[in-house]
Length: 380
Image 1 (cartoon, one colour):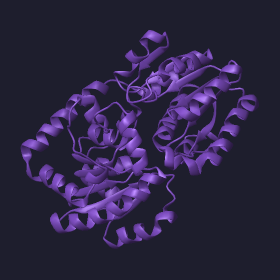
Image 2 (cartoon, helix red, strand yellow):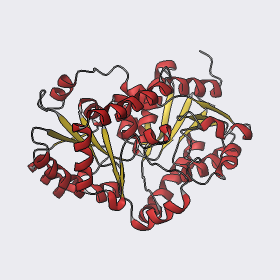
Image 3 (cartoon, one colour):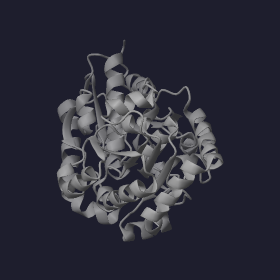
Image 4 (tube, one colour):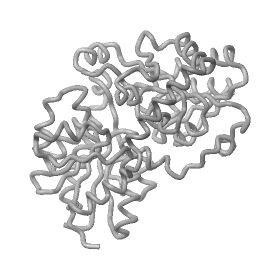
């Protein structure tokens, strides 16, 4: 085995975690070679990319991606023989990554699974399968380690990697707004429509109409939409141009910076909701799936909520506007309540504080890097 680590991330949030892990590994083991599957962030962190991420979500959305996924899997499994990694790090993306873990198992390559599949939400039966395919598990939610306890798998709660990104950021919203090319003294509403192709298709038109309605209902605000770094904006050029015509500031790859500068946020369910919570930004969640995917999901998924702050709090801390409820009128109504009802807003922020305490003192990327080094049995 060489001093090579392979990291596989299938989606935008996962490749963020992969980039942070690569940076932590290179600080601890400067000579390490990191190869893998990811996107621009991982490449910028020094990862030699074998293939780009090819995310799909839900049954209907995945069909068009099958050919790309097969090719990506071929490249990934072939790299085992080419690079002989000391450790394979798989980040979430279970349908793809568990197949890859099985191939690594045949070659006796140690496997660290980073970010557990959401077995607590659906397909709980995968727990034993996962335990049989991987050597160690690094989980990012506090209740997940207990799920694997009876399997004998070494599963450790390492904290959440988004907190690693937040640490060290300046808290001055005025300065952050100026850095983004915004007006420092004007309050900011950020709108994050997600990173998956199907999310953008379904949510961007709603975001455009929401901005128009916000300008009528809440004069005196400015608006910013940070797209994920791997977003192909050419596919959505018409709506992006209309947003810019409404005075919306658009950027790529600056979601965290934009959230840190924000006074309020409207966010598609996902990692960004937890980022907003850790940054103390009041938010509204909205989400739309392909109707068939949502219909099936309602019958499979075993959780009440879709946003992490509500899941961790086991109650509705932030409003979730899903499917038919994801309307301009409902978003405007909830934003208005957050802005004008001080007690409601304070109750939300107090619940944020409870969630922040859960992750305090944890440094996920550093801890996972140590786990990799331990599994590789490298001497330092």
